[in-house]
Structure formats: C-alpha cells, structure tokens
Amino acid sequence: MLTTFLFLLLTGNPSLALPAITSNSCTRETLHQHTESYLSAQTAGNPLLLLGTTAAPIVYTEDFVSRPISSSILNTPLRISHNRSLLDTTQCATYTELIVTDPANSRVIGTQIRFNPSGDTIQKIETLVTMEGDWAFNASLTYFYANRETENNLWFTIPKAERDSRQVIQAAADAYLDLFNDPTVKVPWGTPCNRLEGSWYTGNFTATDSCNVGVPTGVVIKDRRYVIDETVGTVDAFVLFGTRPDSHEFRVERGKLRLVHTLTVMRNVTG
Ligand SMILES: *[C@@H]1O[C@H](CO)[C@@H](O)[C@H](O)[C@H]1NC(C)=O
Ligand SMILES: *[C@@H]1O[C@H](CO)[C@@H](O)[C@H](O)[C@H]1NC(C)=O
Ligand SMILES: *[C@@H]1O[C@H](CO)[C@@H](O)[C@H](O)[C@H]1NC(C)=O
Image 1 (spheres, rainbow, N blue to C red):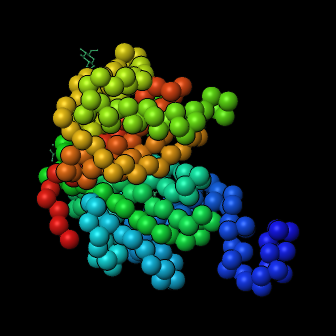
Image 2 (image 1 turned 60 degrees about the vertical axis):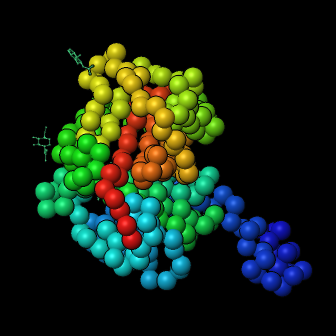
C-alpha cells in the first residue's frame, strides 16, 4: 500500500499504479462467489447474474465457437442436478462441471472462466455443452457415477501437508494426454483409478479399479488450457482432442492419477 501511495504521489497516475495493489487479491472466497453467480445465472437463464451490469468486453465461446452471450446456453434456465468447481487463485480462473438430468434439457456442461488478476472482472468464458450426439452422452448415467464419487467422498479436500504442487498435478495430466500420441510416455497411474467419459465408466468402485484400460493412439491433443486447484489435487484442461472440442479433468493424489472426467463434443458445431 505504501509503495502504491508513493507511486501515486510521484506519477499522479492511478492507472499506472494498479498492478501494485492487485497481487494476492484473487482469493478462493472471490472465486467461490463467482462460481455461485455462474450457477445462479445458469439456473435462472439470466447471464446478467454472472456478468453484472457493467458491459466489459468478454471472450465467450461455446464448444470452442465464439458467439454472443445473448444467444448462449446461459439464456436457457437449467435445473442443475450436480455441480463441482475448481478454484485456481494463481491464474484467477475457475472450472465448473454441471450435470442436468432434466429430460427437457439434459446436458453435461464444463465451463472455464478467466478473470483479471484482481478477480473483479471476467475476461473469458469457455463452455462445452454436451448433449445427445456427443461422446457416450447420457446425463442420467453420468449423474449416477459422478454422484456416487461424491457420496464416496473421492473429491475430498487434501490436507495441506499432502498436497501436490501445481507442476506435479499438471505433469500427471500432460503425461496422460501425451500418451494418445506417444505410447512410450510414462503415466503415473494410481490405484484405484476411474475414468468417467461422457457416461462411460471404467471402474466398479473397488480397490483394484484401473484407468490403464486402453487409450487410442495417434490422437494429437493440443491447445491445452488448464485450471488447477491444488486443494483438491485437480486440473481441468480444455483441449482439441484431434479435431474435437474436449475437456479432460484429472484428480491427482501424491502425484498419481485417481479420477478422470471427460467431455467430448462429437456434433459438427458451427457459429
Ligand atoms: C452446487 O453443489 C453444492 C454441493 O456441492 C450444493 O450445496 C449446491 O446447492 C449446488 N448448487 C446448485 C445451484 O445446484
Ligand atoms: C441412460 O442410461 C440409463 C441407465 O442405464 C438408461 O436407463 C437410459 O435408457 C439411458 N438413456 C438413454 C437416452 O439412452
Ligand atoms: C466389476 O466387478 C465385477 C465383480 O466384482 C467384475 O467381474 C468385473 O470385471 C468388474 N468390472 C470392472 C470394469 O472392473
């Protein structure tokens, strides 16, 4: 604060002084409030509950195609059956997984939101809205497995002393994603480990469940945009899976993969 004050005195220019006061102001509390606003907006079908009334310019994409927020999924009220969010205070970003089983509009949605460093302005919203026609789509079944993971407390908050660093969490994700184009990559498989891909579940909720049950080869996974929350050892990456808009989310414990959730858009989407 003192430096900011001196800087102001010296330059008389408040806009130049801004970076000095923005460090460390993107807190979990701030990000949690934003994810709550996002859920309210999507529940009501009213984007203003997320955006507020200030018309800051925002990049908005749906299935990686830019579109006006006024014609986005945020204008459709959805009855949300399940939500879980990652809070990344380092990048000032969030990821939210939503499942809507309501047959009127069944959807499984993943949304990354990026803020300015002080966490008060949205800069970018990217959302993947999966539905009938997408990879293994069945929202009721996805809900069944996601809810069972929650009931079994598989996404618990990791005690501080046992948390992996951002680098370790991201490296586990990258190893898995690299495997699709390089079979020699060493992936830190954990046990038990389960993959929820659309509504397809690899495991059984038993101690021996493995995620090493085959991945296709020859798929380049690029344009990776991460949101990382060390408190739950989890990273979400929005990627191009070959040519498909895709989300891969990984839960990592002590450097090893334990849970994977994926969403893959298979419809040919256009703006
Ligand atoms: C989001 O999930 C939490 C539990 O993790 C729940 O308490 C809350 O009501 C949910 N919010 C909505 C809008 O469904
Ligand atoms: C989704 O899965 C449930 C449970 O297996 C099944 O009963 C239902 O028919 C499936 N829905 C569709 C549209 O395939
Ligand atoms: C699930 O468990 C049953 C019996 O416990 C076993 O036969 C089956 O192979 C298991 N499936 C998977 C995918 O692990």
